[in-house]
Picture 1 (spheres, rainbow, N blue to C red):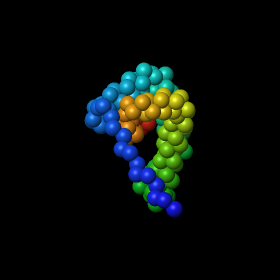
Picture 2: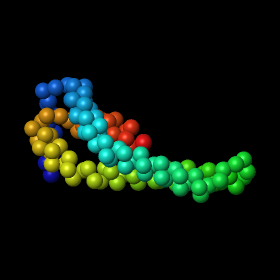
Picture 3: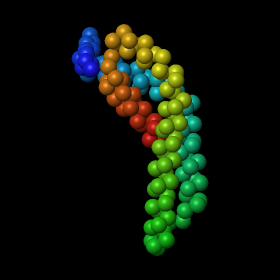
Length: 126
């Protein structure tokens, strides 16, 4: 069997840093523009905190230490699920745009991914 042809490296008009800056600015504007979504996420976190606070009574006993471990596990799993749910909702909308822009060699995958993650990190944590 013949070896596969060597992969061509894509060339872009702008450096990776410039791509990242532009993509980060665009992603940040998109995040800041959706104030309703931000408000809903903050309300979700406050309600979850109130529910968990009423369920777990924490003091200095052995049982409380076990409750803290359970609470930390529950919070970590819940935060991961909320982040995944928001990503799943936005992915189909952005996929067509990203594919079209990538076909035109406007930017690479790494600058896009890094800019998107860093722009959405503060909102995902909230």
